[in-house]
Length: 306
Picture 1 (tube, rainbow, N blue to C red):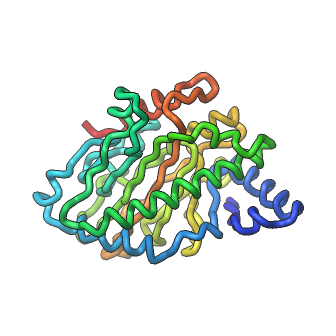
Picture 2 (picture 1 turned 90 degrees about the vertical axis):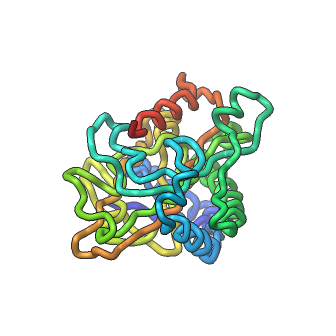
């Protein structure tokens, strides 16, 4: 399995032969794995570190302090342990995922009351970590810009106009999860078949992931190689395409199937935190005969543990 690293600086300003080489490697990887590594993104590591510091302080609060923020999947707040099982999206039974999340989403109203109530509600910011809000909002601004830049690159790779996808992201929805994967010594032994995140594909267009390396880390599935550890570069974002993008390309590209391993017995103190930005499109966008947000809501409901 080969997942290429795409340097956005080379894509932005490189000569035609460099851009052609990048386009070929992107196309090949999205046909097989659905994943890329992205460098040249100009998002400061200090910003990501600040978010992790504040989020860690929240996650380490006692459960009663976090409970007022508890929500179900798709809402804005704290996803408690046991709230989510991503393998359900594939119809596979499993124990709940071994994680907690702080979840945020698009919050700029469109003026359509029904759409706004479902997709653009206000976010909840925990009072216990007041510095989190500014750091996250700064990060989200960068993620929106970066995601549109990635979509423009993907359009060119497909031989389409640069705005082929971004003409549908003028008022797009997005989700942002800060996922905390506690240590084995805190959780105890996982149940059989239990993962930090079970096998699944994402639902939207592109996902931009800032992750940490670990024994219980990200794996990617391909038909040729099965499950393999995902490559990691501390300077890179891990990017994968979701179901809507795969459908938009008529199946030419595949939605990247992945999972996050359970904590490893040889690393009992390992805890990891991932910053996961899920980008979508404008509500009501027709993606080859499917209403994008009817699909998204169905998938979010599917992974909710009742």
